[in-house]
Image 1: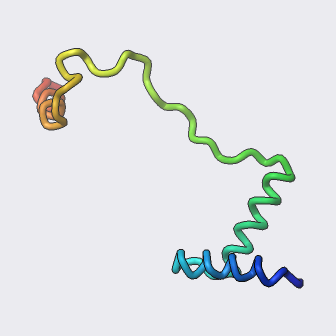
Image 2 (image 1 turned 135 degrees about the horizontal axis):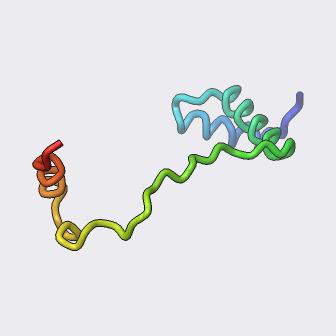
Length: 77
């Protein structure tokens, strides 16, 4: 495979800057990304696990975490 020198230099700089990525790993990641995009495989999306509601109750809207935590743990089980 013959790649343009400038492209190789840019990839090497990114690999060097990230310190944990070799040029080979960077090329592999790029190829995987392009293949995933072109085969239509959807990217992983974390499902929405939020709960219904309107945020914190009024008495806790400006409270520090310690106050919220203390209230949670002071309730009988």
